[in-house]
Image 1 (tube, helix red, strand yellow):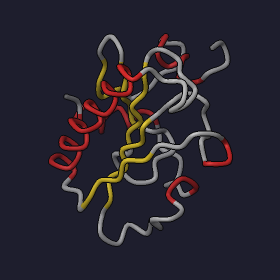
Image 2 (cartoon, one colour):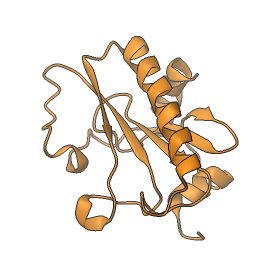
Image 3 (cartoon, one colour):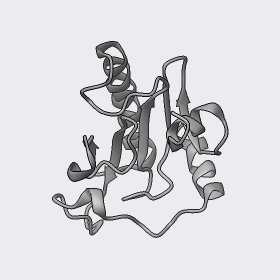
Image 4 (cartoon, one colour):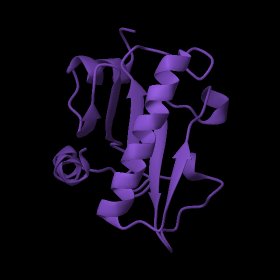
Length: 138
């Protein structure tokens, strides 16, 4: 997709703080994190949502998501991890490329469990994200 920001990240047209990459999956820190260490895991093959993604790619994403969740929990000493995925604008999907959110949770982080998709930390500097990504990479 020509206008898809995630496809542009995959192609290297937009910079990102990558923490995992293989032939099929890319994971990077969210530029608008809900909490410190918020990661997006995406398929390299464009799929708009859960209804569009192949089962093979979906399996790969959840396996990578689990490994990254474990790594994030160990490195950032989180109190919990939230996995989240939305389908369609009305459900809170902002970018129409399938993505799994890995959202570290911390006691008293101020994030409402019911409104995670609309709450974000202040905009984060890409260089700060890249420094953090070096700690989390697997």
